[in-house]
Length: 468
Image (cartoon, rainbow, N blue to C red; front, side):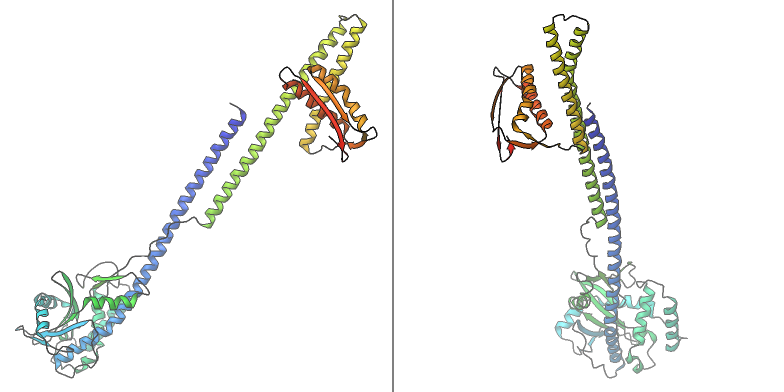
């Protein structure tokens, strides 16, 4: 396996390891970022839910207190409160022990259609729930002032409880009832339980959820009711919180003691339903983007340096191979001829002259190869400087003609020369470099020329003080 192939394999393995580590780190960072964003989203959503619940309870509390006071005032036979009930209260009515219906507040006289609507309601189940609800039981030994003191003490001690705790909701409803100004007009004969505020109960009427508010009507076993238009109430409530939770909705909670962990209202058996804002698709953070950019730039830089190093190494290897090949032939000839002359194998003077001339030419050839090696070294180190001098074109060409003709003869080339220049023309150049270039071109022609025609045409001329 070539050295360059091994180098690229090692580089690819290292790059794969680095990229694998970066992918792992990116996935872990993205996962942690997603968890953090999810936690922030949930926390922010819960904060908005708490604010929405507080806003809804704050809006409902005075309304329910007012309607409770209206019902208590009607029961006591005093002047009813003058305020108009909200639009979502469809119907006010009461029912005595014999089942007789009577309207009050905004519906003092019940129409036939209203009575038919009431007949669809399972009032007995609501009465049973009211009777079995002991939230509002009060010991006879305690009066109103003592119950207020008890409520204040329990509220201060229960500050750490969850807002969905049933006891907290009960106490808040009690406090709402206490704050009702109509209580001061109720005769003393009414028990504490008769002051119970309206409490919401859900009924299923022909498959439709119906909200009915109810409260006991005192010692005469009268129950007072308020039928709520659920669609109107839901629209009214969602309008109050659309700036906080625009996609939120409200749904019935089955009982007042619903122990769901989140989003129960205190005033009514309702649950706030909302979903956190969907998380945006995960994106690479700036640190990861910078990290990936640095990794890619580093890998590209390393690959570029590695490629350049391999190219330089291959070029050097080819150069060494070429130089070795160039030196092998003249050195072999030099050793053979010098050995023959030293051993006295050549006796004729004319033959000796030929042999010596060949040795001279081969030594010049070796010198040119070595000069090429030195020039290559200087070029790589950036130390190559042209040694220019002003020389006559005739002298320059005459100086390179002899070695070129000899070189052409060695390679079996037919050298044709055609010079076009004046005798007195001169130029500034490095004569040695020109000679080296011309001999290298001739060597290449001798090595790679093919076919029957092995001729080289050399012509020259001078224009704009340049030789071509």
